[in-house]
Length: 534
Image 1 (cartoon, rainbow, N blue to C red):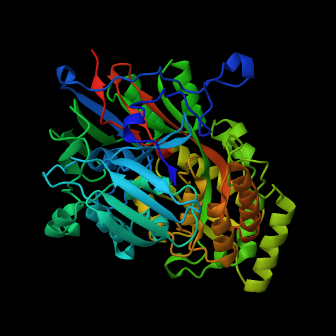
Image 2 (image 1 turned 45 degrees about the vertical axis):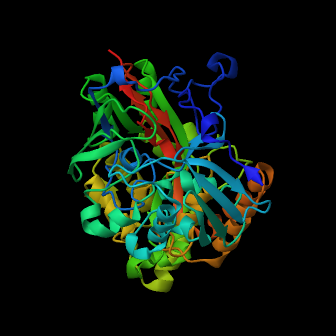
C-alpha cells in the first residue's frame, strides 16, 4: 500500500515564500522574475509562557456559517472554519505533499480506489467527546446530503462506501480511481463533525454554536461582521495562545490599509497590485497564484434560468469578446496573469493548455446570429460585488461586451450577497473565481463542472466534462495528468460554461509580531500554533 507520512514526520510550519507551484524560493535576480511575498522560515509554536493577546484578521468573504462544508477555501471562511474544526490532512506546498494532521496516517491501494485512514489516538472534541472513525463516517454522510449544501459535496460523493474498521480506523472505497484523494481530507470534508453533539444541537443551532476538535472555540459570532474565537484548553496539539478575531473589511485596498495602520495583524488580499503594494512595504506573509481565480460566471441553466446564456453561442461570444490583458491592465493588475485557460502557467500541471482566443469579429458574428435566430435584443445583466476592484471590472467588461453587440446592465450587491446569489443561481452573469489549489486543481474543477457539483454555480450539464474529469482523477502521475488537463481544456473551450479572464493572486499579509501560522490548500491559514511575540 502507498502510505502518507505519519503525523510525527509532518512539519509544524513551512517557510511562507510559496507560489501555487511551490517553487518561489529562487533568487529573483537570477531568474528575472519578481519576488513573491515572503516570510522567513519559522518552526516555532505556541508555548504556555507565550499565551495571551488577540490576533485580528481582515477577511475577504467571511465564513457564512459553521455548517459542514462552508469554509472550504481561504478566500471564503477557510481560516475560521479550520480553527474550530481542524483538518484530517494538510497540504504542504513547499514539499508538494499531503501531511497528516488529525490523522495519524493515510494509505492507498495500488489502483487508488481504496484508502485507509488511521486517526490520532487520544484526540477529543472541545466538549470532551473522543474523536472516532464513526464521527468521520458521519461527517462524510453529512457532506453527501444535498440538504447540507456543502461545498465539498461533489468530491465526497466519489466515496462509494465508508467502513469503520475500528474506533480509530476507517476505509474509503471510491467509485473510481482518484490518485489525489488526500486533497478531500485537507479541505472542509476533513473537518470532522462529532455525531452525538451535532444531532443533539440540530443544524440550525450548530451553524452558530459548533463543536470541533480544533484549537479554538466560538466566543462570539455576528454574521458578515465579526467572529471571535477563544483558545480550546483541551486541544490535542498543545497549548493555544491567542484569541482570534475575524472582521469583514470591504475590499483588498481597505484591508491592506488596515494592516498598515495596525488595525489588523493578518489580512487576506486578492489581486497582483496588492501583492506589489505588500512587496513595496516589505511585508511578510504568504502568496499563492490560483488557476482560473478570476472569471465571469454565465448561467447555463442554474435555478431554472432559461435566458439567452443557455445558448452555447452566446457564451462563446462572451469568451471571445474579453481582452484579458487590457482588462487586468485597467484594473492595475499584472497583465502576466491574464489568461483564458483553466490552469495558470505557474501550475505544476501546466503544459501549454490554451483557452479561447480574443476574437472580437467572431464574437460580433455570434451575437448577431443569436439575435436573429432567437429574436433577442442583446440584453444581459452582470452581477458584481461592491468591492472597488470588482466594480471597476464590471465597468470594463460592460464596455467590451457592448462593443460586440451585447447590451449589459451592471448590478452591484454587497460581497456576501453577491456570493450567496451565485451559489443559488440568482444571476445571469457574475464576476467570480475558482479557489483552486495546485495540490489538486481537478477537485475544484470537477465541483464546478459536474451536474450537481457543489461549486457548479453555472448549472452546466455536459457529459463530456464527466468523462474528461474521470480520466483526470485516475491519471497516476503529473505527466499523465498534464495530458488529461489538455483534454479537459478542449471540452471547456467548446462548451464555454464560464469565461476565465485571469489567474487569481491571493496573499495573506502577516505582521512581524505574529508567529506560528501555517498555510494549507487554497490560501487557508492555520492558527493552531500561532502566538504573538512582542
